[in-house]
Image 1 (cartoon, rainbow, N blue to C red):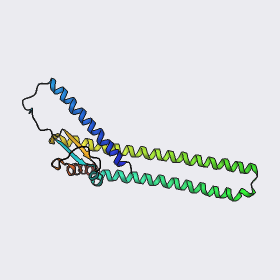
Image 2 (tube, one colour; image 1 turned 180 degrees about the horizontal axis):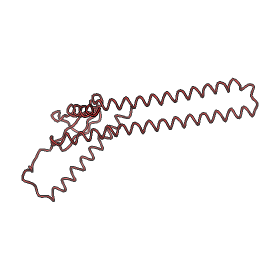
Image 3 (cartoon, helix red, strand yellow; image 1 turned 120 degrees about the horizontal axis):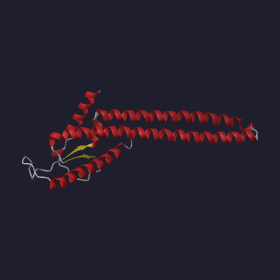
Image 4 (tube, one colour; image 1 turned 90 degrees about the vertical axis):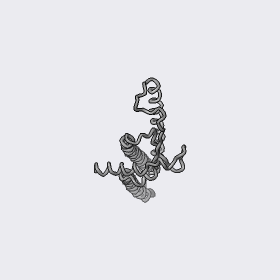
Length: 196
């Protein structure tokens, strides 16, 4: 969960890069094209933004994804705790038998202890990788839904750029005139409810 803001920040930067590329690539093509009569040469350059924090708090699908990730994280923690308790119980049994063990039995107990540690670490790494992959997949799905919605949303609006804003990470001036956060949240929630 700690990484969601980081993922969304990276998503924002990627979207900005794509938008800059598309804009300037289109500008190069425009130099070689004839301007149609219905296009205005000095058309206003509009940029809009939406708040990531508001989106995280109010977009229903994002909240559902966050709950799924938390649930998987809780399941992972439970599995690791269960495994750790099992190993601790076995270690206590071995420690209780230690005074009466022969040297061969002691060495076997030591090997068993090392194997238990290795198995625990392998399980922990596997579960953490699975959780990380799940988080990335879910956040990619959220990002794709937002990008798809913004494409539809912008057909009528005519913004050159739609940026995301996150408190503490503002790289540009923003005018509240172009804040489309509530439009984006309402539209995304409407699409999500329709698919549910």
